[in-house]
Amino acid sequence: TRLATAGPGDVLSGIIGAFLARGLPAARAAALAAHVHGQAAKRGFSQGLVSGELPGLVAAFLSRHPGAPHAGEPGPSGP
Image 1 (cartoon, one colour):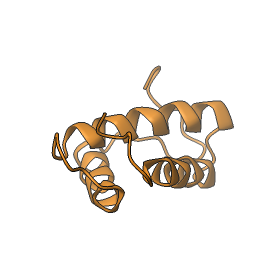
Image 2 (tube, rainbow, N blue to C red; image 1 turned 90 degrees about the horizontal axis):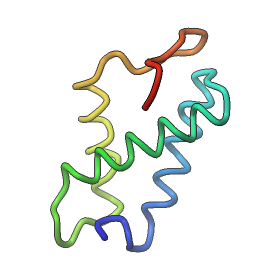
Image 3 (cartoon, one colour; image 1 turned 180 degrees about the vertical axis):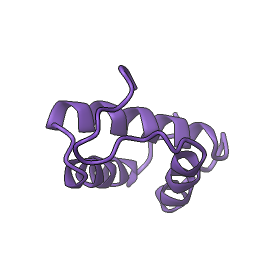
């Protein structure tokens, strides 16, 4: 329910786009973005999370997981 508000889908689209720009295949980018999006949301408030908070939560999550794939590099076997 944390993501059942207006705006988080736009953030998810942006994350997918960022992974595509890094050179990940579309299906991998979408799967990884969904995982990162969900994990970031878990780190936000359980009540009242707004989409404007998600980019910071995503950046914090990715900073703590430096193994995120880059263009041309294989990522972990699963999200």
